[in-house]
Length: 250
Image (tube, rainbow, N blue to C red; front, side, top):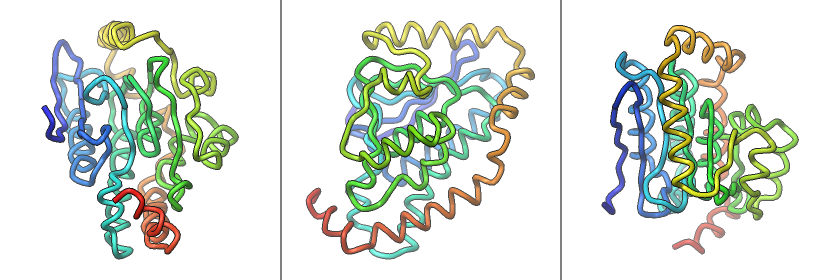
């Protein structure tokens, strides 16, 4: 399959949400909207006790924002709407009453690091290096920053946000708290993710719901915060510097 998609399957209490885009699993606005909707609906589905979030194919987990859409943003409102797509997905993950397990099989960039950070428990392969590349194109990880900082701390987030041209290894991300485990290959990763999800399904759903709410205490203002951050990114994407930089991707 080469067309972009977001799918969800449910089996034995596990809801598996998978997103895909042929451009290294980048995330255009329509995929972001569908992803946020799917996560929200999975949270309401009583048959689902735990959620696995994954991307399609076996290479890049997520390349972040769609450069094709970034290039075509010509006004602040369009920019705000686009970056609000990432905000909506992160907020959907934050408010979802089910634990979300991240399954990161390969490199993840920009908004993809935000998605991994917004999961409740994230596992990866040794190939799952991370990079916050936004400063490279003249923007900055404003929308995903709160989720990344919450997961790995301000110091580590500052390091990768400023050093925007470097991939940091999966082992580095594990040591900073983004990943809980790093595996040799996708087969080992999938075995571990599936076994862990199945084990979580044996727990009290009410207890897991209350634990999730407790873990995310202090983020209740993120609906407003991430919307404000989307405005900043929407403004910066119109800057002369960013426009000239994005032309390289045409």
